[in-house]
Amino acid sequence: MAKGIGGMGNLLKQAQEMQSRISKIQEELGQKTVEGSSGGGMVQVTVNGQFNLCGVKIDPTVINSTEKEMLEDLVLAAVNDGMRKARDMVAAEMSKVTGGFKIPGLMP
Image 1 (spheres, rainbow, N blue to C red):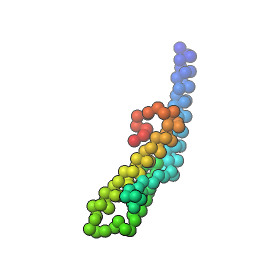
Image 2 (cartoon, rainbow, N blue to C red):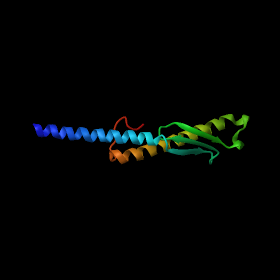
Image 3 (tube, rainbow, N blue to C red):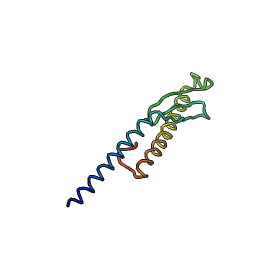
Image 4 (cartoon, rainbow, N blue to C red):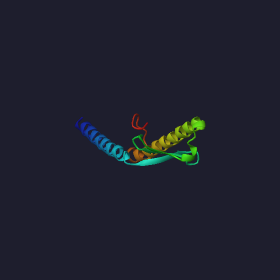
């Protein structure tokens, strides 16, 4: 029986170490960014690994009041591209810790 308790303690210790590494990676991901774009680069966004939109750049040639909806679509497409790339970056970083295991609630 005592042997089983020691194994459980080791498992708990490993889980705590993994949680610590995950927390550190999540903090580091706040400093890492990816670029998303649309319209051949006419709209560019920067998204960090905590899924915060950090910047938006719009080429002046697409700013036209008569084509407002087109610009809105370009911004939306660029943000979605940036978020997809950020999710991919987070998944890649987290898989280094989890060994590729999918842990529910860990990644969006």
